[in-house]
Structures are given as structure tokens and as C-alpha cells.
Length: 505
Length: 98
Image 1 (cartoon, one colour):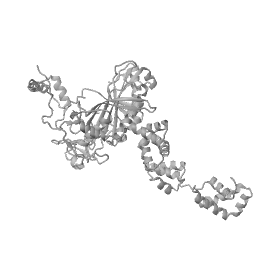
Image 2: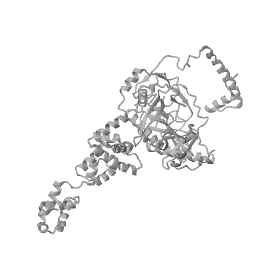
Image 3: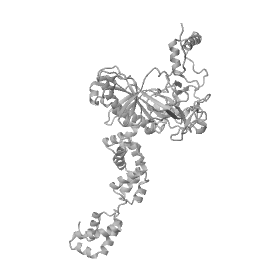
Image 4: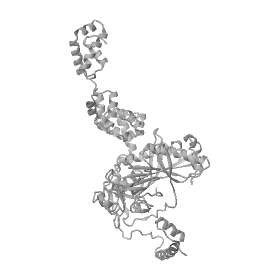
């Protein structure tokens, strides 16, 4: 089915941008953190045993009737407002019909031509401060689907013999945010993709309407990419890369698709309109299914749910509850922390504002909090190919580690080891220091006492030193080391001896 | 003039996953045509400014409080499953859906 030109080698990113202008569009699905499902009172919870967070509504049993979760509607309105959208005064749900075992009803309850929020925008700032306005087409409410595990064969759907279905996720409230086509980003398109996904994640987190953990699929991004020749105003054929599950992957997926499309087009081929799957290991995409006639969902208004009418009063009441928008919050924190523009931008780019804010709230100085998160923790995250914010390091742990260093109980080098041990699951930093005996004796009191003892026990050595034989101090280091279980700093010992004898080091 | 063509019925049967013979398709094309024609008479009564009615009762905003209610055990969930494994529904691998 695929012509040879569709398999053409990707161009380099630079070469692609010389000829083509990328056009992007995003669909971001946000799982809400309500206590219950969108249409049933079963729990909305992650990680429980399969099929234990469902009832007759989620399983699509005959005669089961959905009832809308009011909290989910309020979350949707708040998100709409945060995205500067109009809120529909009247809207309905619709049935989106398809056969697939992830939905036992054979339709997904969604919104079709009457989304609860529409015509919004979001100003997205790139790392260097350049701002792009992303136009939001709509944000609508729907439900998540069950989770399929393909068994037999390779575990992927190709070659699998059967699938196992867990419906715990079925019916989890979702809001899908759809952008209008984004043009004019040029070579910055991949960065903008990442910045937009980051901004949406930060907004839903700030609104506290979602756990917002991408690695758990709370925020899932589908990236549409097409190319048009520079100077053209006619969009090319797009591909849709599905469920890209990290911020970095969003950037990489757009980068790769621009190169791939350019390769196909330059070889005289045409891009196939299809779903693509993101492959993290090779940072490429692979062909999913082409769009076809089967995508005929025959939407119609859901008869089992009554329409929603949102009054202006209700909207204003929710608007009043909105937290400080992330962009304003960033401005405020930068001033409070006294970071330079560049320092702060790096923190934002690394996605570590929340971590640093919490670490400061736990008692660390802003500069120290920044040093840890941007330094050692980021380095460790990099070696694990993860986002630093996704590492299991709590702000309180960072404060504890920092205090250990500030108190001189461990040095920076030991602190790095302690952090590694902490990530390996060995517990709190002070516990690790004690259990592993990592504490250095830089405590002057203990060290001075050990030196005094060694000097008292070795008067002959002391006499030699006083006589100018500085090398004789070496004979005192052994006893001091013995006294401190080898954790004394030799240079420091020498310094104390000379000080005691009134000699300058 | 029938509103429903044979191709429409073929398309619908594919979407609905219902296998139909040639005779059934012919018969259904005629029958659906009659149904659509009779429902069409509604258009004579409804003027252009009357929007399509999805919910005849003027009821709005029926919401549930966000409180956990009853929930099935895994055994109850799987009670009617034709096949199950590891607490999950076991279904044939479906290749064309995703």
C-alpha cells in the first residue's frame, strides 16, 4: 500500500526548514482528578486491581443510565476560562460510535458540535522569552476508555492472539483541548510544541483539576504535523502522532515528523494522512492506521444525558476561584527568589518551578534549592533519561540533604552519593549518612579533641614539630585517624596542630 | 425518490458489523427508504426556525455529587464475561481498530 516515496529517508531538520513551513495542531487529553467517573459514581483511581473501579455504567450494561459529575463540569469551565475561551451557555453530549473493546458501550460519550468551551488562546513563552499565541479551537468533555493489553505474540498488537481489557480507566473524566492550526513557528516549531504542552500541563496542575502526570497518561498529547512549501498558504496533508507521553517526546515527535514529511515530499511523494505511533527508543514514528471510511462515528445527541446550561453567574463564580495564571506566578517568583532572567528561564525550561517553590517553602534558600534541582538532581535525571521533576525526590528530602551539607556533616561529594543512594530506595538522607557511616568529622570540636589527645600521648613528636620538623606531624595523623574512625581531614589535622603550637601553617 | 441508497445500507452494515446478503441489502434498502420517507413528514410540520429536538423535556443540569458510590468487585465485573484472564476481560485481538 505504501508507495516507495513514502518510505523516503527523512531530510535533515535544517534542509526541511529551507523549503517548507511546518503547520502544527495539537489535541491534548487531560484526565481530571475528580473522586469519581464522568458518568458513574465508581472511583476515579489509578493503579488498583483490574475491573475493581467500575460499575454497570462503566461496563455499558443494558439499561444502565449515566449521570453527569457536576465537579467535572466545573473543572471543564475553569479550564476553558484559563484558556481564555468562551463558555457555551448551552451544550450537550453526543455519542461517538465505534466498535472496539476499549469501550464496552460501543460508543464514547463525548461532545461534538457543542463543546463547553471554544475560541480561546494561550500565550506560550519559549526558553528565550519569545512569545507565540496559540489559538484554541475548543475544549470539550468526554470519557476515557479502558486499557487493553495485547497478549500472545510480541505484546504489541501486531501478531498478538488476544487482548485483555481492564475497564478501570473507562469513564474517567477527560477534557480534550484542540488548537487551531499553528503556523509561523518555522524552525521553532518543535520547541513551541513542547512549550505549549508544558503550558497546558502547568495550567491544569495550577487549577488542581488533574494530577497532570504525563508518565501516567494524565496529560496525553496528539501532535498533528504537516508541511507546506514556503510562501504557500495551502496546508499539506497531516499526520497525527498519538499519545506522546512526555514533554521532551512532544518536541522530538514534531522534529522527526517535519524531517520525515520533508523527505517524502522532496522525493516527489505524498504524505499519507494517517495515525503515527511515537517510538521513544529510536525517536521516530511508525505508521499506524490510515484514515478511512471507518472513521464514520455517526455522532448524535446523547439521549440519556440532559443538556447543560451555564449561566453567566456560574461562570463568574468559577472565574473568581481561578488561581494566579502560571505566567503571572512565574513573574512573581522570579522577583521573590532574586534569580537572573537566564537562571529563571533555565528553571522554567527544566520544569522545576514547583519543586523549587516547595523546597523553598520547606526552608531552603532559593539559591540552594536551585543549585540542587538544576545541578545534581537534573544530572541524575539525565543519566536515567527522565525529567528531573519525575524523579522520586521530594522537596523535603532536598532540604534535608542541603542542611547536612550546610552543617558540615557531609561534603558536596558525599551528598551526591547520598542522593544516588536515596534514589536507589535507601531512605532519608540522614538515615543513609548514619547507616553508611558517611559523616565526615569536620566538626572542629571532635577533631580538636582528637588532636589534643594525640599530642598529649606523643610529646616527643610535638617537640620535633616545635623544633621545626613539620613533617613529623604525619606521626600525629595516624592516632587522630584512629580516634575518628578514619574520617578526619588530614590537612585540617595539620592546621589544628600548628594552631595549637602557635605556629603559622 | 428513495433517500436511502443500496450503498448507504452496505456502508451502515459494515459500520454496524452486521453481515448482509445481497437479498437482505435489497430488501433493507427499500424498507429503510420507506421509514425515512415517513419520518420526513415531520419536516412539513416543523418550520426552518425550529431546531432539531434531541431532548423533548425541558430539563437541564442534572448533576451528581462527586462522591464515590457503589462499585463492583472484579468477580462481579467479570460475571458475564464470555472469557476472562488475570482479572481482565479476554477478547479476540482486533487489528483494525487502532
